[in-house]
Structures are given as structure tokens and as C-alpha cells.
Length: 447
Ligand code: GLU
Image 1 (cartoon, protein in one colour):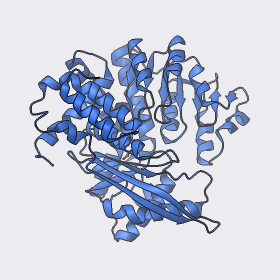
Image 2 (cartoon, protein in one colour):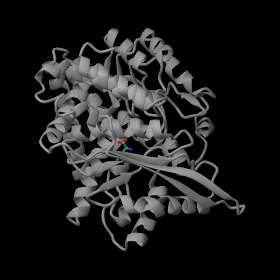
Image 3 (tube, protein in one colour):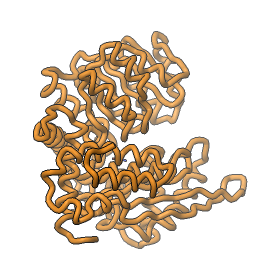
């Protein structure tokens, strides 16, 4: 797999010691393939056991989450918090509530988060958590009781300078409210231990929009520098209409893109007139079915297969749903239809095979850990505001977000140039993120 014997040994140990954790293997493989390009320049890399320490989470907390449903039956879910790496700051990363959650997915996300957070330039380590619980089909009371039970264990492991969770798939403002409320009750403290909070209890303006907006700011920088163009007038597809996808659609439209297709887990919407963001936002806030888009826009074609999205002709594709949602077959269709750029909005939404295919075909490609870092970066801004007991305006936060996204782009591009692969942002993001964590680990002793 690797030319370098040290990388080869540590990677085969990862496969052996973390069996069946395919998502975790995938993210480690991708990062190692990038690091291999700079190994000769790294002093004390092997004798300090950097790689062995890098792939082993500092701490994994796995716990029982019992709760009582509306029918009076006891339900038990599994809770996780993976505190992966705190070399550059307190653990930071979201909580995911989804039936697909397992230890492999938690570890992949926490590992990825470590480098993403490093790229933001803010002092945040990497963590992730969640549960195999899904809010879908549950009553408000059930969701609240679940969140309280989850927090009755997690509260002792987190804190404003220890570990600061936030949302992710299945965890939005509602769940964060229940989680934070119970945390506050248990600790008798009002601190910024959560981000993504409502504005009334310490949230930051623009945090809700930040991941989606940040993706588009990153896309603009990439298209300008590497393609001499912009989103304006481009045919764009966005997958996923959760918190990330929705605001990516909104900002892309604001920047003049023609968003012609979107999807969710049950539908693809193809609207040649351009997706109407107002309808999408109202469907989302009323927790309606995305298929209802057709009621207001009868000209749109709606199918029940989310994969149909990638068959729509486009210039730019922005997958914002979930890991490995876009495989090699989808990639081939997109390329044959004239795709110019792929910007990852979710965490690792493109399989490794599809990523390599896009790169071989000369498609501009941005990895999620760079292009979706605007969410966690704005969480970092929320932490700052909480610490100094201030709240900044929407415009001030949005301005800082834009500056951060441009800096992330520049850091990734410069790193790609340094290793002789200008424009390979996968390698650039991994190297720029890794070098910061490596330096911090190297100078703090063997811990
Ligand atoms: N879940 C988001 C991510 O994947 C945000 C994490 C945060 O704000 O802490 O980066």
C-alpha cells in the first residue's frame, strides 16, 4: 500500500487492531497517502511514534442511554463520545443522532475533525459523538427524555475548556436546547460548553448558516484561483437538505448560481427554473416532506430515488448529505455530463475510488475537511463570544467566516504547491492540517 515502511506498518496495524471499521480505515488511508509525500521532511517522526499516537483516540466513552417511550416501554440506545486529539485545543466536534451511528463512523468523524479544526486556525482539538437514536418519528417528549438521559452521562466528560460538542446529522437547535438545558441543570453552571445554541442562550448569529455559506465561500476561492471563474451562472446540484445543504443552496443562489437539483433521503427534485429557496426553507422549518416542493412548483420533476440527482447535467456538484453518498458510478455520470468542480459539503461524501476518478479527469475537487470547516470555525467564534460574554452581529461573524474560508483555501493550495501537486486540495488539506497537529504533538512530550 505504501512505499514507506513506517506508514505501511502503522496502517496494517490499524486494519488489524480496529477490525471491520471500514469508514475509519478509509479516512486514515486518505490522510496517510498525503502524509507519505512529506515524510522525508519530518524530524523525529518515527522515533516519537507520531503515527501510532495519531491513529489512537485519546479517549473513547461508550455508554448506555436508557429512556422511556410514550407507550411506557423502556428503550436503550448506545451513546458515544470519541475524544480523538487535544494537542491544539479542547476536543471540539458535533454529536450525530442517526440509526447508522457506530464506533467506526464516530472514529472516522473524530479523526477527520482533528485536521479540519486545525485548518480553521482556531485552537480546537478533534472529537465527535452521538448515538444510534433517530429523532424521526419520535414525539417531542421522547426526544427530550432521550437527550436528558444522554446528557446524564456525557456531562461529566465535557466542559468549556475540555470538550465542546455541537450538532451534526440529526442534532439541530431543538436537540441542542434539550442537551444544553440538562447539562446546565446538572452542573449548575452557565458556560459555553455547547455551540450551535439558540441566540437567546448564548448562540452565535450566523452559526446556523455557517457550514453552507462557508462551502460557497470556499468554492468561490477555488473556482477563481484554479478555474478563473465563479459560481455565477453555473448549473449546480446540492445533495442533502439538512442544515448544511439548505444554506449551501441559499448562498449559491445569492452568488448567482443556477441550482437545478437537490435531494433528500427519499426524493430528487429537478427544477430547471432554479430551486426556490423560500419553499425549501419553509418545508424545513415546518418539518414537511421535501416532496411537497411539487405542490408549489408543478414544473419540477420529482422522483423517489436520491441517486437520480447525479444524473442531472451540471457544472458544479456539492454533496452535503453523508459519508460515501457519491460512488464511482455517480462520478462517471457527472463527468460525462461535463462536471467542472466537486465541492464536498458533508464529511467524506465521496468514496476514495470516486475521488481518484475526479482527480484523474482533471475535475476541481475540494475535500470536506476544508470546504465544510466553516461550521466548526463559527463554533470557534461562538466559543470566543461566550468566553468574553459578548455577542457579535451577523455581519461581523459572516465577515470573519469569509476571511477564515479564504485562509483555509490558501493554506490548502500552498501545501499542494509545496509537494509539487498544485491544486490537489485533498493532499493540501491533509498536509496543512496534519503539520499543525504534528508540531503540537512533537513539542508536548509523549502523552
Ligand atoms: N458537525 C460539524 C462538523 O462536522 C460541526 C461541528 C462543530 O461545530 O463543533 O464539522
